[in-house]
Length: 154
Image 1 (cartoon, helix red, strand yellow):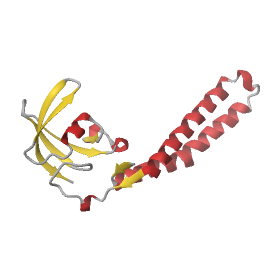
Image 2 (cartoon, one colour; image 1 turned 60 degrees about the horizontal axis):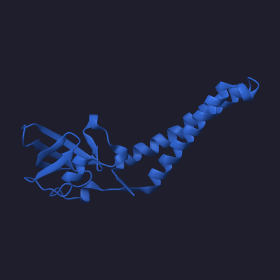
Image 3 (cartoon, one colour; image 1 turned 30 degrees about the vertical axis):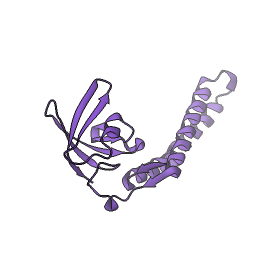
Image 4 (spheres, helix red, strand yellow; image 1 turned 135 degrees about the vertical axis):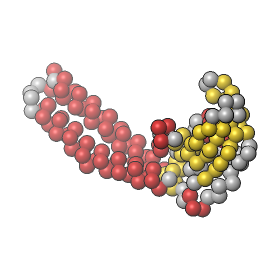
């Protein structure tokens, strides 16, 4: 089961519709065009178009599976007393004093540029269940870091 926000769910549905309505017909047209060029046994363009079709169908099937397993979380029913999925967590690195903020989201919604980290990352795993004022000792690839939770919101 993939927990996600309404926004993340709608994004996946829109992407699926785009792939099925726009990208799939493009690939089918490319295959038809390559087929019209003659002998398929030595037609690299046909092989490439068939491979693109297989990749597209795989992506469509993955999206359908993710959407089918999705559990949309209503943030209005969540409490901001502990860190959980869809929480926006304000943190301070105890050692350096550097401040940062992340929103903990599902794997499919993760985007570091937008400050959204996957619930499966070491940082998110270390923060789950923490309260404001708690210090989380988290093991990351570079070693251990201590992050103090300074705020939790949705």
